[in-house]
Length: 310
Ligand SMILES: CCCCCCCCCCCCC[C@H](O)CC(=O)SCCNC(=O)CCNC(=O)[C@H](O)C(C)(C)COP(=O)(O)OP(=O)(O)OC[C@H]1O[C@@H](n2cnc3c(N)ncnc32)[C@H](O)[C@@H]1OP(=O)(O)O
Ligand SMILES: NC(=O)c1ccc[n+]([C@@H]2O[C@H](COP(=O)([O-])OP(=O)(O)OC[C@H]3O[C@@H](n4cnc5c(N)ncnc54)[C@H](O)[C@@H]3O)[C@@H](O)[C@H]2O)c1
Image (cartoon, rainbow, N blue to C red; front, side, top):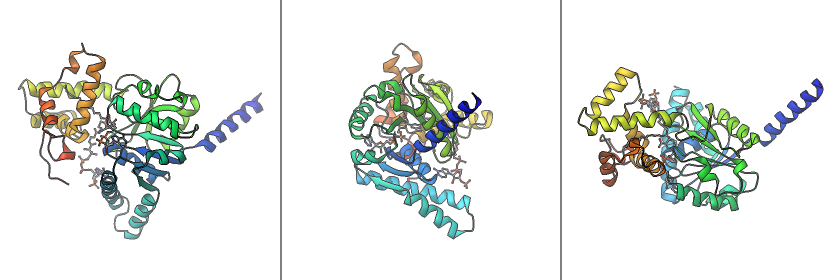
């Protein structure tokens, strides 16, 4: 009996090892996709980062190189040779592409990090499901959309999960691994092992709105906006208060600008559509005006604050 248990355990460990994720396609090379691709490449995975145009992927490559430069300066101070080796190794694992259907053909795992819109994500996964090999795992980095609503367009719900990374991906240590009822144990274990291989601490959560972090973070951010809309305090004073009084690294308005106000609006509009009676999700005139004016935060140089364009 003990021997049988040993054999089963040894077999399942080796199966897991055999199947471990080695090749990854990341779709969407914006804030999150470029960070996910960078970290996966830095941990020895072969990564293809895909976006819609060459101009967009070129911009992402520049931002990845900047991030790697910051990392190597800290990791190998005063060792130019080690800095160069690290950068070269990471970049050798990273391939940029605009051809998603070819990229997924040789991928163990596809991570979607495109715009936070259910219809656009479903359209993409519908195409991917026909193009990717049967064994390929699918994951979405959505902040707020139920994973089941995205996965239902595919015929591989058992191979589908959520991998919710945090911004900035190279620095934030957490990864939420989300399973839907159909996610197989093998898929969940592979996704979790992939997260750990990236150096992240993983937590498991069901496919519940906001998962863990955003379920708690969104109401806090909404209250911050309402406080300012009522004229009770300025964004600057709210941010100062939360940094110095609550010990947060960024205040809520700095964080909104950092996340992107377009993404923020997609999140809140999506939740409002799914739960229209909930007063938490009532539209915010300030947020809507900033987005209408294309003041999307750090990425466009202005949001709640103004930034020097990088
Ligand atoms: C009704 C309408 C209301 C609507 C409201 C709805 C709200 C919805 C919002 C929800 C959003 C959810 C988004 C998502 O799903 C979940 C998230 O990701 S939430 C965001 C999580 N992230 C955070 O909370 C970040 C908090 N900030 C920080 O931890 C730090 O500020 C920082 C980002 C790490 C930066 O540190 P700082 O000290 O502030 O600044 P520095 O610039 O000095 O950086 C420190 C150090 O790090 C290096 N560094 C920074 N960025 C990078 C990078 N990208 N790559 C590599 N290295 C980086 C930098 O060089 C510094 O290095 P050092 O100088 O120390 O050597
Ligand atoms: N911004 C954050 O802090 C954050 C944190 C965690 C999760 N997320 C989630 O990650 C996802 C991406 O967010 P982001 O902030 O990186 O957005 P972003 O706007 O920075 O980048 C999105 C990228 O996807 C590309 N894209 C859109 N449709 C595409 C398609 N069909 N095929 C290929 N590329 C396409 C866009 O060109 C763009 O480059 C969203 O689901 C968001 O909710 C965001």
